[in-house]
Image 1 (cartoon, rainbow, N blue to C red):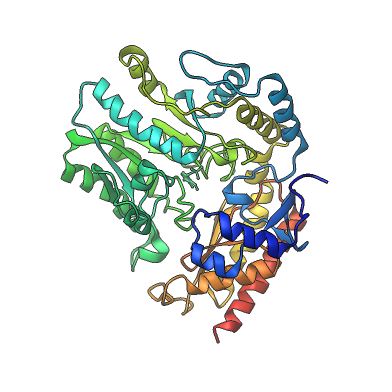
Image 2: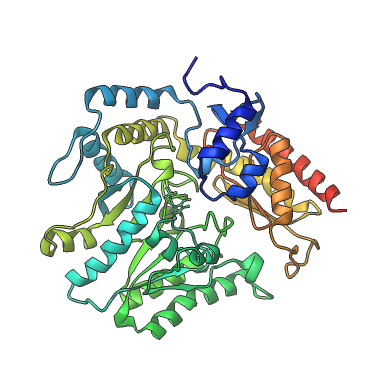
Amino acid sequence: MPATSNIYPTKQLQERDAAHHIHPFTDTGALNREGSRIITGAEGVWLTDSDGNRYLDGMAGLWCTQVGHGRKEIADAVYDQMRQLDYYNTFFKTSHPPAVELADKLAQLTPPQFNRVFYTGSGSEANDTVFRMVRTYWDLMGEPKRKHIIGRWNGYHGSTLAGTSLGGMTAMHAQGDLPIPGVHHIAQPYWFGEGGDMSQEEFGLLTARELERAIEEIGPENVAAFIAEPIQGAGGVIIPPETYWPEISRIVKKFGILLVVDEVICGFGRLGTWFGSDYYGIEPDLMPIAKGLSSGYLPIGGVMVADKVANAFIEKGGEFFHGYTYSGHPACCAAALANLKIMEEEKLVERVAEDIGPYLQKSWKELGDHPLVGEARMVGLVGALELVPVKGDRSKAFTPVGDVGTLCRDISFNNGLVMRAVRDSMIISPPLVISHEEADMLVERATKTLDQTFDRLK
Ligand code: PLP
């Protein structure tokens, strides 16, 4: 029996968990009262808990398990790597074969301006790296006043100081007195919630032009970069109107600022392209990556660095005083390489674009007819349902915001489907290997969940 199997009764695990474990993004008081859900095993798109219940993992872990759970190829690659070279660092001009091989592979998979990666242990560390890299780049370019970075309200770039600051989650800013000085936020292209009477196209242009307005207000000579996710994930799967990214690209070019496209969720096939930047035709200068890079099997992230930025460091930089003990960890690189091999061999990106993506999108979008749903949207294999109190009226929201979403999420769990609630939106982002039959089960369970939530609100 594997060491992590459920050899203890659930209650005992919950009590010890509550006594000794402070969880991320969790109300510890509530956890102490209610107990945690203990997951003991996973295979494909299925999770098993300590009471033997099975759940369809509609969130691919935390938007990361592209190749599904339990892939022996990855476990074997990590085992072999650990026996060959368990750990060595990549500081001070040292390297090792898996770090070299993965960097080379990433240079092949990413858009052509990228030929180099800076390894990190997570998406948050990638964005902290971005923060220091962007400011240092402008110092090297002889424009040291360019220190201001613009992000978006309700964007998410991680939980570290720079990640939280660059993100636009006000509840996160309030804890730790953030953002760091020099970080600004503009409106998000969230048409369903904030678009008023405007068409999607008009609203896309309006919110993109907020960037132009902000740059002019701060002073173009002071602005270093703009950072955004192609589709905001944690903010509620905010799919921008078609007019948005072309206008952002125009503005970024006009003012010559760096464009940072956070691919931590959209990267590695989620939208049916290798990267969200490919999907939207965006040309970033820096690209934070993580999650799907290793399908979450081991922690690894990175920043893809375009030649323009890398060359400044190579030609004028000297030492970049930045790095993590686990930058390019051999076992994590081996996991990522095995994961990317599976993705290529099983043509998972093409599968999302041509097969399972369109298949699930069709039935997911039909959920838009449900009386509780104001909009059902999906690109590739990431989607949202906007729950509304009055069908057909986007101006009305549930009060307090979030209670109905939480209720729906809990009902969904009881129906054997993991969906995430963001405010009153229900989110899915399933593994890219989900079968047609499992996609049908996902939609059946989501429908049952919507019906039961609707009944509870009567
Ligand atoms: N950037 C984006 C877009 C994310 O969605 C996340 C995590 O959800 C992060 C960064 C932070 O990544 P991590 O949790 O690996 O630090």
